Length: 110
Image (cartoon, rainbow, N blue to C red; front, side, top):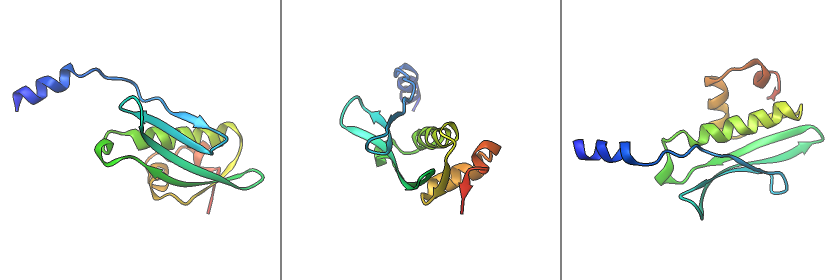
């Protein structure tokens, strides 16, 4: 057990970088350097309204805070672009409840 803890300390810690692909309407985090990725999908449902539809993190990477980074990036995008948002994704709903920032709350549509 002590050996496992020691190995964790030696693992390089890389910051989570969220990429926004406006054409594909998704936010992504590349995992393990290449093919694996976490994703948050959205669609425009009106001229200035987006639906944050789905967040998915591969099983092997869950519990590491990756979805939080995706949620924050998506909500910051809504704020920066002065959009309104529907929250179809249960995880985004949970994130907003845990982070009830006024700039997020005033842009949520039910």
